[in-house]
Length: 326
Image 1 (spheres, rainbow, N blue to C red):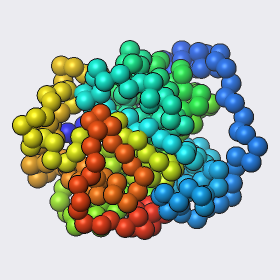
Image 2 (cartoon, helix red, strand yellow):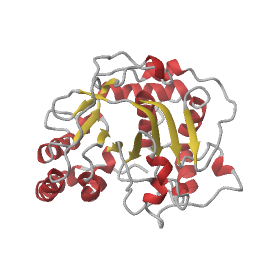
Image 3 (spheres, rainbow, N blue to C red):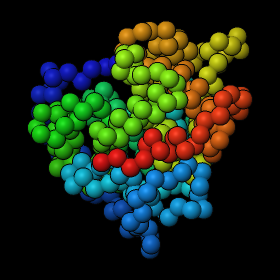
């Protein structure tokens, strides 16, 4: 369900950020400083990477479509193995935390916490992809999300009118203030051109024009496509297969593992899939991910499943559609 970041909230956030983030700032700077990059870790390579072509890539890929909040420098990041941890209640009681933390990079979404859930979801966070609509919740949980974030990259996405840099984009304004108060945080935005590429990729893979169909891409979509750009192999934890919610053997679990009294997962998926106005088509996205997994290095765990044979999806489509934006 879409949660609007309304104008009325911006004033409140501006006040609370200035006061409360200063309390966090001291805690962040008292932590051990981040380790310097290893020798040869930087690279000027800027051509798009074909997912799965690990042998041909430099140690670090330069991802032009993800720009730093202040200096607009592109994100430089590459991982051989990634654990993409969903926020699904499927992870509750699965005890996958240790396996998740063994990946080189651990990717999480929005405000999904690890504290208190380490046994099931792990402790580490290398990258966190955050929707504009989750900004308030992230700030609410700033003590946990930011105090231990010396080596975490934060990528925010949102519509262009919220992310504009001319003083009128109030999400960008809050992120800029956050960076000023906590200069060690690694905060990036998905560029406008890159956002258009995400839309185009969805249209190529589904035949659906997102804007004409009044749809919102989910944070899961942005996270998966971003992971394809920076990871050689992706292990997805907690994502059900596309037809799972039609099965009589499905488990009834909460939509979020950290909200046990929240909506039921399949009820959420099915209601959004049937909606025709400003909803997330989670199941449609999962069909695309399943299709990609037939050709790319994507594995699904908890539940464990293998994609069924469908039409062939070209990895060239994936890499080209998200090739370096500006």
